[in-house]
Amino acid sequence: MSQCRTTTELPATPDYDAWPIEAHLVEVHHSLRQVTLHWSDGRVSNLHSVWLRENAGDDSTVNPATRERILDLSSLDAWPEIDNATVDDSGALCVRFAPEGLSLRFHPGWLRAHDYSNGHSQEGPLVPVTIWQGGSDTSPDSLDASGLLATAPGDEAEATLLKPALESLLGKGLVRLRGLPTESGSLADIAERIGPIRPTNFGQLFDVRAKPDPDSNAYTAIALPPHVDLPTREYQPGLQLLHCLENSVEAGEAIMMDGFAIAEALRAKHPRTYETLTRQRWCFANTSRTSDYVWHAPIIRLDDDGELLEVRIADFLRGPLQTNFDNVEPAYDALMTLQRLLRDPAFAMRFSYRPGDLVIFDNRRLLHARDAFEGSAGRRWLQGCYLERDEARSRYRMLLRADRQRRVENAG
Image 1 (spheres, rainbow, N blue to C red):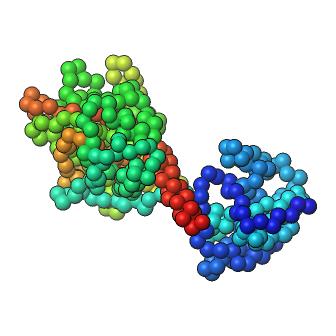
Image 2: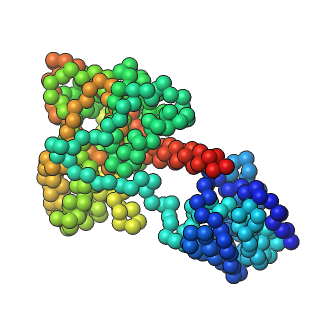
Image 3: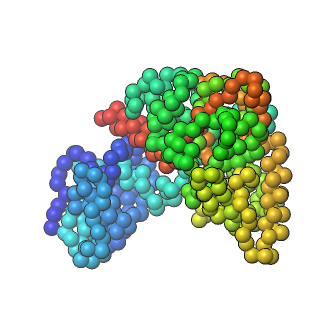
């Protein structure tokens, strides 16, 4: 049987991250299928043997080059059980598994961060979700980003600018960056500081301005009602970026609404409407001269725990309702209740774009709209693109990882 070697070097973790040690292991007890850890701050953790075996950081469990798992639990001769468990000289947990006879070590910082026995779950939001209402005294969280493109990708100066921006985006669904360049195409360089752009039938970057023969109401000077973009897709884009290059027109004020606030108002005041909108599937269609996108989905979508996940609201992109005969009137009654709520100014955040502004928002949560503007006097030019929510979350996790790495280095 293998033994844990005597060492003061901490073991590898099953990922690329750094995990500061904020409490030390002081005592360990075990049964065949469970280990109990006692920490220096009084916490007690209970972890299953099978969970530990699968999450070891050694080269029998993960490929050291990629940190991807190579262990297939079903290939083991028997359920992994614990023959012995101790704290070694480095402060790591050392477990000898039976019947393998293999001793594996676990980083205490990693174990503490992934302690599922104390209600800790990494499935929750990275940033607490703040649901907000609008009104005349509200405006987007705004940050001076004039130095963003002068920073080197991945350095601490870039992180100082991006981290608060991503926190506002992930928490409130919206952030405004100011002082950015106004050259056409510079949006791509900015967006890629977060992640890859998602191209659509409108292109990688698209220009929002009045033009002849438009293929979208956005490319006119008329008012746009509150909506999300591309609800006609099976997987609508998670984030939208709108970068102001020019704005010298009269009117055309931008409007943002938190779709989650509207959904919560429905849940509180119109529970039957809310239930109908979470259940009834509507047709969303964008049938232009060159493409034909159609998808059916509820207007309000919940996750497995009943929490708000996304909204799909865009009246001008709804196709004919297709449902059971008896569902038609209740569905339209619920729809009209929602439509009336969308006209309530208490939900509307209103602001004007100035050149160099970039607004980033969650396209599966926030609704955006605009007032009509005078298209013959002055110019209004926004350049836009889409990213996925995953890109913002990944980028934010990388910033947190860099923070943890610095803490580990400073502690050493």
